[in-house]
Image 1 (cartoon, one colour):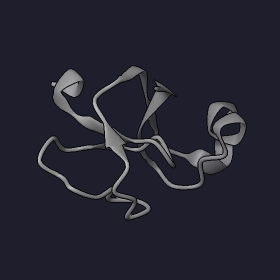
Image 2 (cartoon, helix red, strand yellow; image 1 turned 90 degrees about the vertical axis):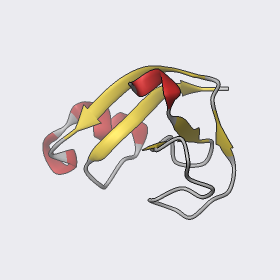
Image 3 (tube, one colour; image 1 turned 135 degrees about the horizontal axis):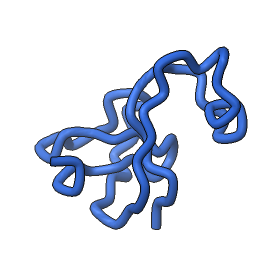
Length: 65
């Protein structure tokens, strides 16, 4: 379930709950306090990805606290 996952405070990438670092940027700043979920399949064609400055496909949180 997505709500059990950790989100990187740096890049907003959704990670598995047992990760100690972010899969995308290797940051250790992960949190359980996040809201909203978006999956970006084609970042080069996505207006949301452009707005969020996302360049890699994947699952991202919309709001990270």
